[in-house]
Amino acid sequence: MRLVCPECRRENEPERIYCHDCGTRLDHSQLGSRKETPAETAADVHKRVTGMFSQRGARARVVVLKCLKLVVGAAVAAAVVLMLLPPAGLPAVVKSETLPPQINLDLEGMTQFHRPPQLHYSEAEVNAYLANVLGKKKEMLDHVLVDFERAVVSFQTDRSALSVGRSIFGYSIYSAGVFSVQFQSGKLSATPLSGSIGRLPIHPRLMQYSGFLFSDVVHALERERKLITHVGAVEMRDKEIVFSN
Image (cartoon, rainbow, N blue to C red; front, top):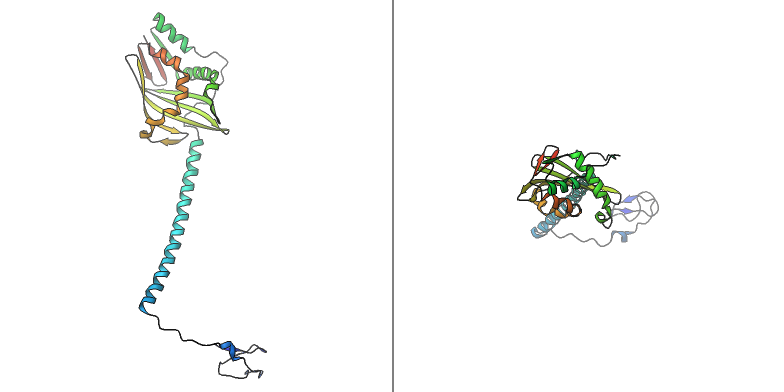
């Protein structure tokens, strides 16, 4: 340690009494009592090195935790975006001035008078009927903070897809399911195959618990379901459904 002159700020050797430049008497009290540092033992070295690595590990854990939070946040944001996107291939809302087919009346005529022998309906006709019937039952389909918008079906051979749109705080969210449809002994059953919320897929194993997503719409169409159980056969074709005596 060197002695600093209080006048000219020159650094002097600790042995000097007077400043080398200006001759001012130096204050040796700033040297203090000099204590020799004891030799570091092996245990002290081990403790110091362990502490260094421990601090590095702590920093690494902080960095990893921040990265995990970033990844989780990005995954949640991506999931929300996918949920807000409508399912691919969803038909646009079309307001028709013509009266949609009265499927319920046609089914009543078929079951009571056994004619006509077959009823054919396209996807567009079924969806127009659903828009008309469910639109009149909107109050029973609306829930707290959740407003019903529409339900759309599509047909493929032996299977059908149902998409139900609801509005939450002004944002449209669609729940979609693909079902294998069977009609035996007057009983119509649907086995879930796949599904999604928006474009976020739902694992097939979870679809067996997804009934609550569509239960209100199914309940609103209870009259139509009972009529179908009295027909002879129901056949799903590509973009078409056929009822037979």
